[in-house]
Length: 384
Image (cartoon, rainbow, N blue to C red; front, side, top):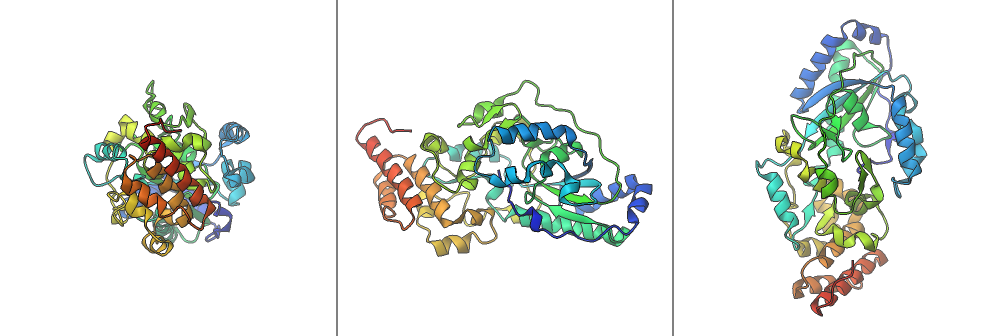
């Protein structure tokens, strides 16, 4: 749910200068060296995938045909380019995939996250977004890896990506042996669960692909059962239009009323399926300080965050993935969360302070929240 339609603007780096054959001659050794360098750069794992994704195309087309991408029109515009790396970056032969852990440095983080979701006046921000913008962190380190490889073998054609272009990252990562696609559609690794980012390095090198890891989800459906909006419509199939991450991040307009109560106190993203997944008991804490919580996003209350001015939001969210939703959607999301809070006077007063907000989007969600709280005060069952 975090993909950005900016991939076609990223420049291709280097060019094939004849080193591809040299890399092929000692491909296995080169991959081992890449893996060592990746670990030195803070990555959790590295693998190589081939780029023949033909068998993934029918599923992608079916997903788009069902409209599961919602208002993310760029996904439909890119179409099958997402499954055809050589169309996005001509000359691509293999994809080097990396992962980077982001779980909180807290052995009881799963329990603490669940506890926070049960505190309706406290804000819940998806654990991946508490620190620095992962797009920049992963791409910067992945480019360093590419530069190190170029120093060893000479210039080669490549481009780096992290959730920033039409790339089937989970599909490629599973083919690179980094894990398997879970029923919630995220990549799962038996050694670290699913709390990691993925990075992609398209190359024009002949590198040996890894063996795929088999699916270990078995009969477990905990992620499906945990989704409060029923967005996981079937194993391995997500309807983004119902997903709280989509509703609070990607959706630019009003949040459909039918999903507002289910959002609870989640103001940016959702971790429910990951919190329910038994594999995340093996999640590893972030190896980089970049993903440590900033601006008390792991402990702040809704009223406090709702009071931020546009200037405060932009200053405090600088360098955060949250910045891109803008202050207007930030207030929209918090207004919904406040509407789901207990009908206390302080909550109502905070909403009333923005009842005349310049943004029609914010005013509409504040009005909904106030109506819901006043109904609750009057002893009426709140509307969904």
